[in-house]
Amino acid sequence: MTQPTPARNPRSAFAPGAPGAPGSQDSQGSDTTEPPALHLRAMDNLRFIRQTMEEAVYFTAVSGVGEIAVGLTALVAAWLASHRATAQGWLTVWLGEALIAAILTGGAVVWKARQARLSLVSRPGRRFALGLLPPLAAGALLSYALLAAGERALLPGVWLLLYGTAVVTGGAFSVRIVPVMGLGFMALGGVALFAPAAWGDVFLGAGFGGLNLLFGLYIARRHGG
Image (tube, rainbow, N blue to C red):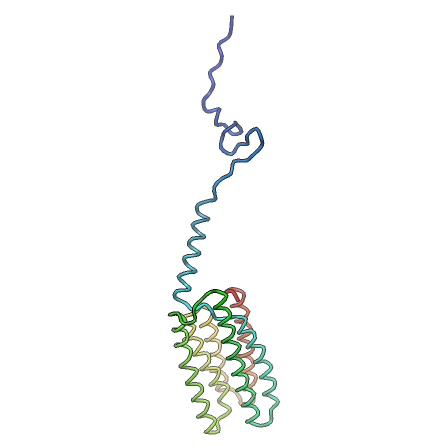
C-alpha cells in the first residue's frame, strides 16, 4: 500500500537559501543585484541642491591658495621693513607688499572662479566687491592723512583694522570663515593702535602674514583651493 505524499509547504519555496528566494544564489552562483539605497541618492541630491544654492547666494571664489601666498610675502615684507632706517624706506616696502598682495589675491580669485565655472560679475560677486572696497578706500585716504600729519606710528593699527573691516563686510557674502578672518584682523589692529610704535612690524607680520597663512590653509582645505 502506497503512502500518501506529504503536502509541500508553499512558504518553503521562499525560505532563505531556496532557489529564487530573495538574496539567494542560483545554481550558477550569481548574486542578485540590489538597487542603490534611496536615502543615499536623496542625500546626494540634497548636497547638490545646497551647493547650488550657496553658489547662488555666496561668493565662493575666495582663494585659500592666494591667501597663503600673500601671507608668505607679508612675512618677508615685515622682516625687510623692520630693517629700514628711514620712514620712506619702510613705507616703500609695505606699499610694494600691498601691490604684490593685490595681484596675488586677484589672480587667485580669477583662477578659482574659472576652475569652479563661477562668474565674477554675478550678484554674489558684486556684493562681495561692494562690501570690500569702501573700507579699503577709506584706509587709503586715512593713511595719506596720517602720513601728512606725521603720524606714521598709527599706520599698522589703521591698516589692520580697516583691512579687517573690509574682509568682514565683503565676507558677509562669502563662506563663513571669511568674516571670521576679518574679525581677527580687526582685533589685532585694535591692539596695535595702543601698542608701542616699535611693535608695528610685528603686528603687521602677525596679521598680513600669520592670519593669512592660517585662514588660507583652512580655506584651501575646506573650500576647494
